[in-house]
Image (cartoon, rainbow, N blue to C red; front, side):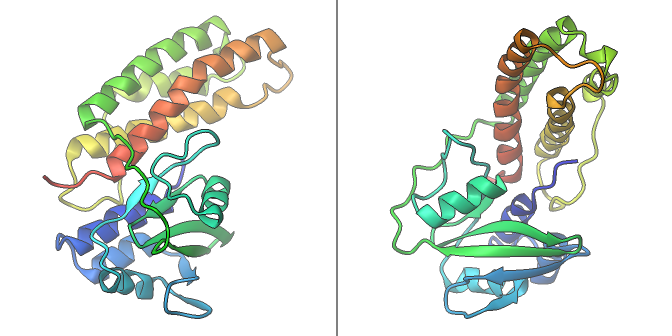
Length: 245
């Protein structure tokens, strides 16, 4: 299962900043069983607990954080700060506000380190154009259909039977824990499907043991999965970034 600590930080800090949950509930939901430390938080020196960062958000005037999932060639939603760009691309995720951004990095099984990047001198980025939940859900359906046909043509099930099993299970409801209690149920469903599809991508892109895909097949596979990967990223971000209207 793909883990998005930046998504948890974004959704729970936003819920706290907007008065939809308590500080203690938000902090517990983000940290779980791990130890979290934050480096580079404005106004501090050295590593500080994650709770300090939550408290600092209000002092900095933040009203929400957004999950950004950057990849090479697509940095939408990421402020143009070289240190942030490099760290976020390496991590694959960031929780971004208007004054500060946070990038997670696992340093041990039970320890997560966050790098805080001061955005006070950075030009504001153009916000990513997030589709409605129904739109991103529909985009997932289209991408799954196109990708499934190509994967079937490559006979991927012959060496990785978990792929069609995961695809077939998309119609069933998927429980997605870790979201605020008032979070939109469609957002939770979209996130569950996106996580399942991320697993499909991992399996489909893995080398087949003893039955390697040839170059032509790999090219077709990669071309088919590229739109699915984009749809999964956009759906994941939209689900975590949902806020009540």
